Length: 356
Image (cartoon, one colour):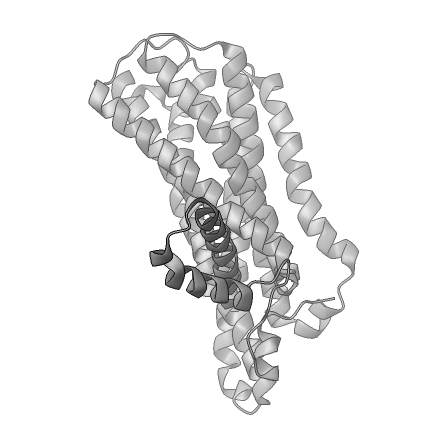
């Protein structure tokens, strides 16, 4: 979705700037982006690792969320480092090349477009799972694969147009990205979650007479949809300012602030929408008990390895009690490659059931 920022660059608002922010301000901004990169990679790395080691997390919805997590991780690996190069080059008075900006903006468009379209796919899948649960369970694998492939494919197509249109048909490209990359997906997402809310509200009383297991499974559907709705709301809040500035830069560039304040505005806006990639993993973990349990398992394995390393470097008798404690904890809770599940009632196992 950096297509919107590309509009600013298409008009040469950024290329060639030789402005200098105060050193303290520049240091703080750089440090914040560095912290953001670490947070994004750590959080999304835990999500991806959890999905790999815990089969219970391999549900249809979680598979869609994993694809969103991949795009979030790309933000920390590609988008933010490239953006840091852009604004640091601007501030030290060494203008970056047009080629370097085209690479950055093309990748950012690809990553951002994929993110919002994955959110759209998730909202559609959640709506169908709750409103038409029986049909949802009989959907073909091809349909689910399409919800994964289409966002990536469309993101590639739209991003590939950026270098072609650069400086030629900026207004048309901005309209294309704003409508298909933000407003239309936002309307689909909004309709999907309003439908879920209305259906859940109308089904609340009849649901009281259902068996306990089915009630738990149904409430889990609502809970997971609330999680995705929260993620979507945060995404819209994070991205909307960038689209507003993009449209303004395309059609009313004279209304933009002075160059120094414009780059400050861009630094703030981009920190907000990049920060969304850091928030998402914590939202998943907070509302997903199975994910939290997997995080604890990963953390315990790391602590056990650290303990074993320290034990090999120290043979102090004073630490024998701590070593025995860690040893019993590691052996009892973390066998090699084995993910031990706590005792659960049968109905609780329905909470994260996979759909075939």
